[in-house]
Image 1: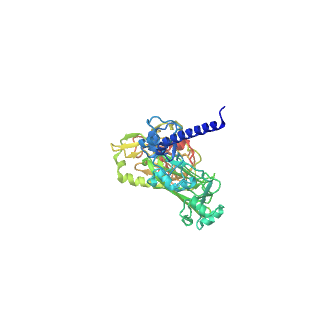
Image 2 (image 1 turned 90 degrees about the vertical axis):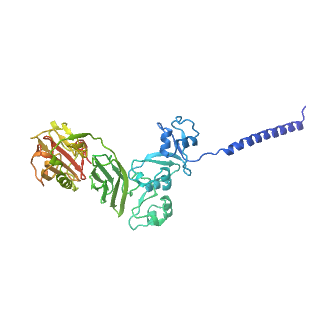
Image 3 (image 1 turned 180 degrees about the horizontal axis):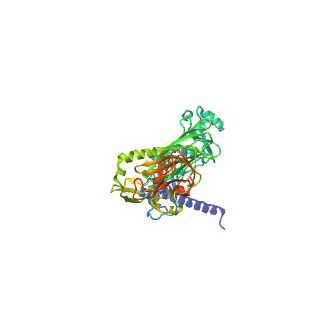
Length: 471
């Protein structure tokens, strides 16, 4: 029989042997573990269709650095759902997501609503100049925190941050921190801040009275529609591509401005600016870059009477023509899509489309076609497509016998190369009224009707106006 003392001795001996073995293993592993450093930084979740090349370009890092940070040997071996550490962004953490910069947001407004400091957004997105911050641009945002619910709040003229904080049941120091201000004195009248409250979905760069702001796609030769949802009594103006914006109240509420985009405008970024005063004396000042897209136009060569190309004739005539279409009168005369200016049999017979790049008498393609040419020859009726007031009816060297009608809100229709005019300046016309007879006067190769639409002092493509209700 084995004594209890022997058994205890054996157990103690076994315990010490095991302990020594474990200590040896830990000693061996410890140096290797000490040499390993866990990389830190933000993480991107690979999306379907992503490649390592795309991801490296998006975050402004080299492909080699991205592969090394993630221990990737083959650039082709990356799958959707994988987590990739993005190197070179020390101090930033969380999962990185990309979104488009919304219309109506500034760098400051987005920083305040997300709780991400401006300098972090700038560094993360490699923003070098304000021109890189435009509506629709791709923006990288780290989703690494639970941002408290906030709503927009704007300082009225003469209001202090303390007064604004009291109205929102908070203290000014909390608002200073939330809005990344240098101090309570740093907030300016009209500046859009964030305060505790139920989150709103309105444009973050505009005061809370503005519930929505939209703009249609900007494209060469097209009509842009700008809508701003703001209370009645708002005074509003603006500018886009060098043109003054004219906003008018709508029956449904809010304000609308129509503006043509010139067919020869360079595609790229342009500044959109808004200015006004909201009820209660809250100023509205906002600007953001927007992108104009290229249109799709064809090229054509024409031979015409050389005297109709003489700049001593064309320049004064063009200036006179554009001056006629400059005013934006307040009464909107049309409702829905416009009616055709020609008999239905000619509606689909178009010999030259809007925006065609033109060469006259062997010139460079420095001209463009400002409207639609219908093949209805001489002697056909010309109809008013909507109610309006005639602002011109007479003869011009290039346009021949021409008519222009004001339909309100900066929208005009015009008719050229007629053989006879049946209205005169100052007349009020109705939809479908015969206003002239087609012919071949002015700069033409043969009889036809040239029909154009001017919006905000710019000739635009008439076709959408025949099928679409503007605004």
